[in-house]
Image (cartoon, rainbow, N blue to C red; front, side, top):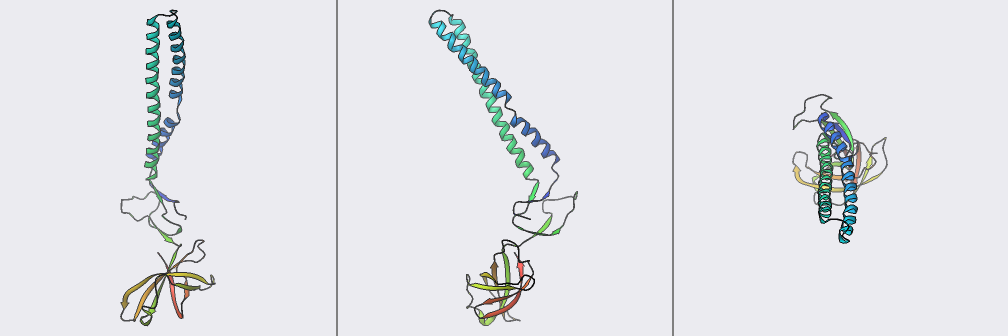
Length: 222
């Protein structure tokens, strides 16, 4: 799966229906066009009557009536435009509600477990599925105690995956554990290995070289 991909969807029949209704309203600008056309007509009419009134060819009453009709048309257009904008906001709200019913992958990875099946009941803390992140990979290495203090964060290391991947890759030291495992006299080091194309699977054994050190460990995805 890729980052942002929908991997599960909660029951969203109501939300989808609401979205369809909201979209229909948001796409219907007939009322705005109608009110705008009427206002343009009344504007021209008012201008004509005003000129006629100035030439004493129309009564003041007719000019007042024309002005009143124009003001009413302007108000109706304003209300229609406001309703249209509200419809746009309702559409965005409906889209957001539907989006909340979607479960998307937070990163590129591989689905390794499906905890629920279609139609199963889901509560807020339910485990839906497990996605193994494969880029970057974390390489966990346990080193002899005598190497403590000689491995620094940011140091580069060579990674040699076992077959069938093979080859030589470069990783960077991202964590040097300061807690010692007394029974084994070792400490942990984490390497970060870029794996943008997912060519190196998680869990593959590999050989690690940091300076003169050679150690065998496994990839663990984080």
